[in-house]
Length: 582
Image (cartoon, rainbow, N blue to C red; front, top):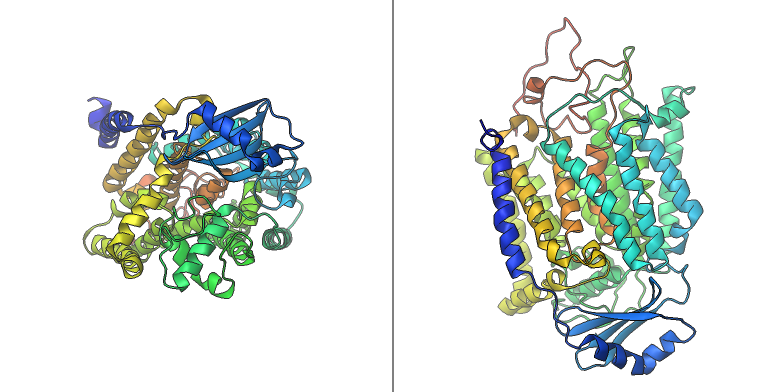
């Protein structure tokens, strides 16, 4: 029998890849440049705004690229370092100018988060929490792939935009591949290992080790609060969502009614603004000169919430895992270790200090996964995440595929209810024309061209549609496999891996990528690639037959390939519970 007949998921994925690849390639087009490149550069150099911005700067070259058919970006470079960025209108006038007189001034976020001691310290702590011994383990390659984004951070902070985009390729490809393999590949027992943190603290008792983790977590929380809330350089997204929320308070739809100080600040779904209304009530924002401390605080709280949700999941799984022949590893240590690992991931601190909405999206997605056994709540949370940012809508097929009967109706009802409520808010404020305005505004995300993209940096924009087709094929393969495989549908860690692979794939094949987007998938990576490992000398893994009947709610944090036997030899097995118990 051929591999395609043995694997319907593979056959469906190949079919979708071929059809979607052809369709996307045919319809793919680069944004039209409203002004020819030479004319745009010449117009920019004639502007007194640009002349003033370039004063004292040396530049050796310039480039121009279309944005949305009406505006154009002109960038000036000193070698490969960007020294100025100009937004040009179609009539040749200058709309915005940004210049970077110092190579040490980051583009967004608090400068403290970029300091080498901070990056190195957090990176080492992340490796200590996620790495294992022996060192020759695939998990340690995952750790190195995650830490490779430090190069992206450092290069972008010094405005080497092209090099920064290229540096993302190894880490993104490796993590996406590993997550896809973890979710769809065969279940193999992982070789036993010991966390590096346990090796470093092997002389401590579990209680002392817990105190060390608690103190470390407290220090990280204080760092996030102090660095994040006091950040002097909030990202444009923070101003955009706060301005949109302020408009909603006054009964005005954000689409087409935001000030022009943030370019295309209305390009987000309606809940990106609506969920910030409570913050805007306390601190209205009307221009970029207003304070966005509320948005900074919200980003910090969202990052802490995402880490807390992932820790809760890891703790619940570890409670059911026998750790050592002589006893059980306290579940609390697993949760603490996961929380410390996520908060010590260096790009997350920068993301929180920029005030973006990315940590909030990561929190919504992990909460939706935590609620997996409750179809209505889980699907409703995922719908909120989708109307907050579009990417989570790609996970909807995964959430629906294993549902049956009443559970499927509940999930569909929650998705439809949240969507109708969001659309109703748009119609109530802007009428039926508000829907068209939203579609037009959000469309910018799909048409823009940005140097912060590996496809742009490599000159492979023509190949980008095939990458997008590969992500669609992955979604179809995951959906078919979840529909057929009951054991996979009962394994939240593998579902987390599939969700992370899809979100990372969407990011990598988009027209613009920023390391802040990693916050979407970071909690999922903590559950799928960095769960509690199988300790050296532990018992064999749980057989797949047992996993097929394991209740979903209690299996968070357990990696089936590395999980320990839950039933002692000679004892009676626990009662079988249905996978989709209400």
